[in-house]
Amino acid sequence: MPSTAIVWFRRDLRVHDHPPLRAALAAHDQVVPAFVLDPRLLEGRFASPLRAAFLHGCLKELDAALRARGAGLVIREGDPATVLPELATEANASAVYWAADVSPFATRRDAQVAAALEGLDLHETQGNFCADLGELKPYRVFTPYHRAWLRAERRQVGRAPRAIPMPKMRKGRLPSRSPGQTGDFEPGEAAARQRLAAWARAGAQHYATTHDDLAKASSRLSPYLHFGCVSAREVEERTVHAPEFRRQLAWRDFYGQLLLHHPEAATKELQPRYRELEWDEDDELLEAWREGRTGYPLVDAGMRQLRGSGWMHNRARLVVGSFLTKDLHLDWRAGERHFMRHLLDGDEANNNGNWQWIASVGADPAPYFRRLLNPTTQQQRHDPNGEYVRRWLPELRDVPVEHLAEPWKMTGEEQRAARCVIGRDYPQPIVDHAEERRRAIARYRAVA
Image 1 (cartoon, helix red, strand yellow):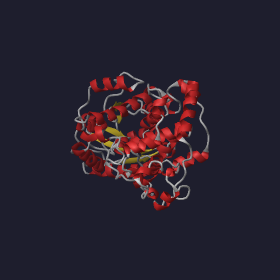
Image 2 (cartoon, rainbow, N blue to C red; image 1 turned 90 degrees about the vertical axis):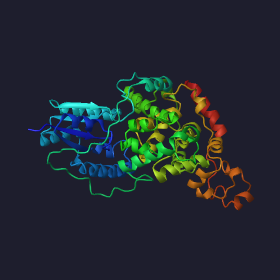
Image 3 (tube, rainbow, N blue to C red; image 1 turned 90 degrees about the horizontal axis):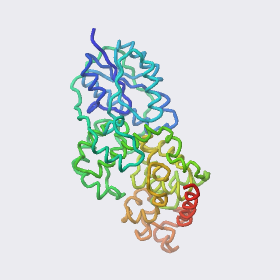
Image 4 (tube, one colour; image 1 turned 45 degrees about the horizontal axis):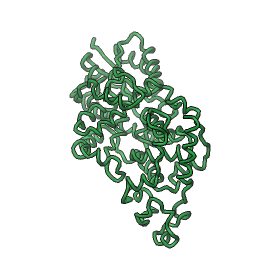
């Protein structure tokens, strides 16, 4: 009787450089590629209609890629701890392979699945990160982690298999409901590989000088990395000539290992002293921030980019995060939830790590006052010609560039000439940055 293994796809929706798939094919006669639609992921704490639609598109393309190799994607719905043992019995499988993940939900789920599959040969491989997070010493500060990460051994990037022998069985199908919109990104491995090829060829080498320029193109690979449409390891190998960009991949691994070793950080400040920090509660200010009507153009442009495209430039993420926590004094977790609802690249480890970093409560040795970003000077520095702001705030398109970062300082005549009357066409600033900066310093100093 042929030996059969299940390959459990999760955040690795590709056929190129897929360690669990390669390992299963090397050790078994037949492979059952499977994906479990877990309601807890689709409807749980960080539910996102946008990511659900993107996932739908990625799974359709993955199924087509598997069919082209003689197999196909087996779809089942429910709790993996129940579904996978049933599937193993149905396929007469003796082994199950999957790629290790790091979130508290993922590690709990995988432990439950392993217990439910007792008696089968289980293999948890690499596949979601550049380095083997289980082999690296855990760090709470990025710089020493980065040094160790650069020295760590790497697995070889693998090609896509030409053929995947699969037993005859019921495949199932994706839900027939409309998948909805996927923002500015085409889902799936083909689009991911096209974007990686273009970035490796003509973008990555300029990253060191352009990464903070809001109007310049960035890799825009993050949604594809989150869903594993392309592997982080392959991205690293193809951009090794761009050390500053490679450093961003190290940050992604860093936040992954941080959440793996400190699961409490999913809901609490990594630095215990800042768990005593008092946050304001103001639904009106929070809603103004969410909708991009704070009166600070760079903040509003970033928030509208998020709602309009499912993505936001990294520099803008830092500015809007600082504004929420340091200018509005609102809990970073409110920002984290909003981002996770709207970001196509809404990765719990990365999103949580970045929010705690900009809120000065996480893995950041710098003093809190280093992360008090002035939205006006940030705009003048990183969008000097106003291209980014004008794209996302069309009501400011005729405002002269010398007034674009502070449109409220225009005279009445200048406002009418620019067809942007403050308070009517664009809001007054909802807070005064200089005053709120002083308040933030006092609040952090009280618990530091």
